[in-house]
Image (cartoon, rainbow, N blue to C red; front, side, top):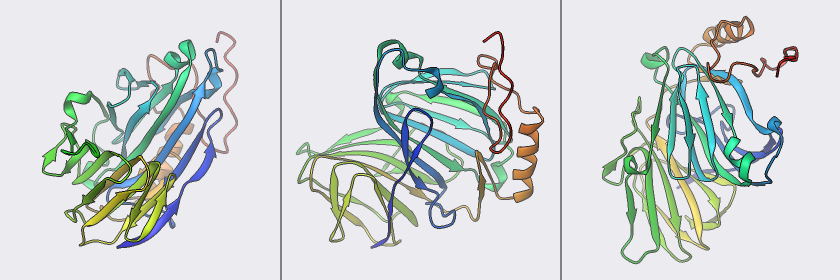
Length: 299
C-alpha cells in the first residue's frame, strides 16, 4: 500500500526553515503536485528583519497554493493583487505564461507571532501552461469542512474534489488537497478515487499499513486500495494527489513540459522582461548564479 516514505529535507530560506518533500526521486510528482514545502513553525519577535521576506520573483507553468495553520503572509503580484492570507484560507496564484510576486510578513513584523503553513505548487496541463496569469483568494466559506460524529476527525477540503464534495477553487486538472486534524486513537480512510495519492504528517504521528509515519514524513501510496489511518497522537495530516500530467521539468521557480521554455523564462527574467508587482517593484531575487542587483540608494 505504501510505495515510498519521504523524509523532509530542511532548508534555510534566510530567516526561517522549510521542510521540502516534493519533488522527490529525480523530480517525481504526486498527481499534478510538483512542489511541497512545510513552512515553519517558527516564532517571530516583533521587529524581525525584512531580510526574512520573500522578495519579488517569477513563476511560469504552475499554480502556487499557500495555506496557513498560523500567522499571516501578504501577497503582492504583477496582475495587481494584494492580499493578506490568514489561517484556513487559500491563496491560489496561476502563473501560466508568467507572473511575479512577493511574500511579505508585515503583520507578523508589527506584532510578532508564529508562522506555520504549507506552500505547494501544482503543475498546469500542457494546454494551460501558457494561460493568462491570475490570482484568487478563497476564505473558509469556499472550503468545505467535515467533523466525524465522535469528534475524532475534522477535515477541510482545500482544493479539488474528494469525499463527495468540491471546493470553490478553480483548478486546471483533477486533484484533491485536504487538511485533516485527528485526535489520538481516531481512524480515517482515504479512498482510491485518484491514481496518485500521498499523505504528509505535519504534526504528531499516524499508523498506516502497519507503519508509523511521524511529523515531517510523506507517504506515497500505491493505486487501487483504500488507505486506513489510525492516529497515534493528536495529528495534522495533509492529503494530496490527482491525475498525473506527464513529465514536467523544474528549474528554480519555473515549471514546464519543455526544457526550451525554461531557458526562455530564465532569459526573460535575467533581461528584465517580466513585470514586477506595481505594489512591490523596488527589489527582486536574481536568477541563481547571477550577481545581486545594485543597492537602491532610495530604499
